[in-house]
Length: 168
Length: 375
Image (cartoon, rainbow over all chains, first blue to last red; front, side):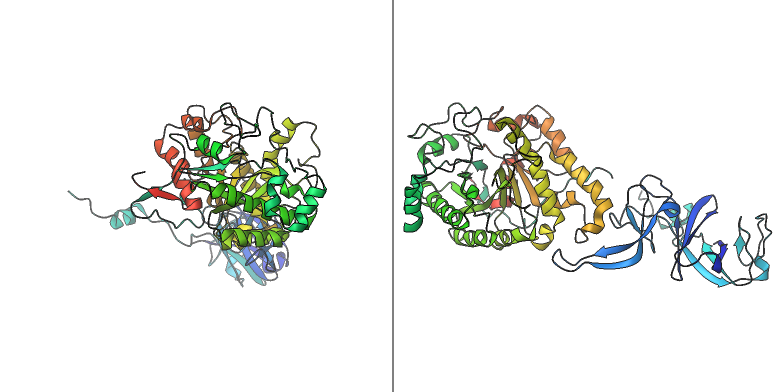
């Protein structure tokens, strides 16, 4: 598990976003009225910079075509190229939830620690939190993105253990 | 977006063929022709009968297949007493139920009651036409079924007519014309869908129109050729409306039979509909699955005209692109003449199981018609 400081909490104002690079991948962090979400900055359809240029939109639903349309703001991220939409909280698409999704990252806001201080040249420092490529002061809270998989993939050995024994 | 997996089964298809019987071969589009407006006089009340006579019995020729034009009659179709094929039940029965023919045939009488602009007159003439069909056709041969002609201009009255005719038991579906006054998905037309679903009847969308406005989406065509070729785009608009307005969510047992409008245009239409739905999904939030998935479950297409898919292999390729073996049902479109004979469509596939589905199983899902197994 690697958790990266990506910004001072005050750097991303409500309604704002920040694009960072973590482990070679471009990631977008959104502040929606104090709730933070992070998604891979790449649309799974055609590769558009989804977070950088996407529109934060609402999600509409209706029980039936003759019932009112319920609308909840700030729930979807709409791709700048084809307007395909993803749940900004989960990265799951609305049009094909099973197959089309954007990778989601866990985001936390935690108190900064002096050990996390990094040089303004973006040098990396080990501490309770890892900061990669971004110089932030740590006087207040910091926004931290966790790049670990929520469901880590099995190692080859683990997979072999779970496989039923070959029958003779 | 990958190729869709082949699907089987459609909306409301939990029927199974009874023991000792087999699914019937159904000819899903056969045309009975009203010889003269006067044939309706016994079926009109005094007021409308006198109105008709006083106006010298105008015949509402719909003009979809102009008499004596190349499309109107195939060579060998037996003419009725007036010289026009499809006007006499014995001649039609002899032609349609020849050896190797269907077990049942569904009559779509296209007499132009829907083109009558006066609502009460349209209602009266639709009733009379259905009664004429029941008495003079369905009573004559128990292998005949018919579509219910409805006064499309007044959807509530159309629903009442569906209720009335459904009680007969021999009306197999509701007939709507491809071009309407307002798209069929619009809520004003919902009473028709509601009534059809209530009685478990499919709705045929047949080539034709109500002529309340230009019959193509771009204006008045100059020629019959433009009109006939132009109707498939009207059906794209109707299916887009029906799906987008949520008819298939509101009335989930709805089944639609697109009749005499071809089917080769369907795969690219589905692809485009799905693609754009992903972008405009918020406009139609009740649509929670791809339009193509809904159309595969709810919509069927008749095989005549076959539009070239009778070429060897062509039908198999098309079915692959449709993503379903359930979407085609057999029709002869008797007595109309197309470039290929009705059963030539079978040349388009090397798969006898597909042909069997088209001739029997897919029709069984629509109409539930069966015959004794040894027949």
